[in-house]
Image (cartoon, rainbow over the protein chains, first blue to last red):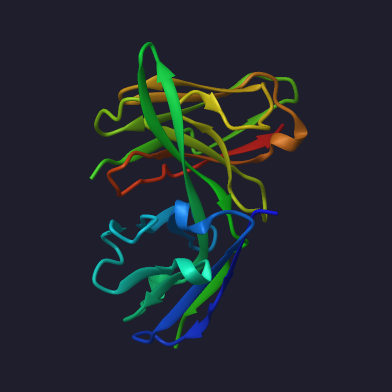
Length: 129
Length: 108
């Protein structure tokens, strides 16, 4: 069964740090880019960060740039998010999500499209004094 | 960065109604758009990618269209199990891959 399981969430004071983990199983983890997406209480989805399969390409949302660090260990089938200098507005459920690249043919050309097709159940981060 | 704006933010419709949700990008994104469904208390689920291609297993009453800046998600005949919040997402190889604000769909 294809599965993602997050861990590491909890209650932390403003300015503190947390490290989230995401354990992947049931698929070839090293072949996929991965993402972190968060959802504040009662709010919508916010893309946080992504990392390519070999860690060559890493991106962050402006809201977390310089404070969060995404990484992965393909040997351990694991994705991480190191969160430093946490703020109250970082309070959210954090999901890891697999990015799948879909190939579509149009006439004689092909194009790649993307979607997050596997999601973990999420881990809750609460930043409060 | 490209902003994604959904409308309406919520809607209420009867079972069997045709429902349309709109997503607008602040710049052209060709058809690099995905749609997700998040049922209450559940994890988001990929419905559509490439603006109009249904993900495997998604019921055919869902459809997507559009290109450039304007996109729509249509539910041809609303069912009780479709109660959810729907999100569009600009999704290409150049992050940030921003989500729209979401559209909450309820049964009247």
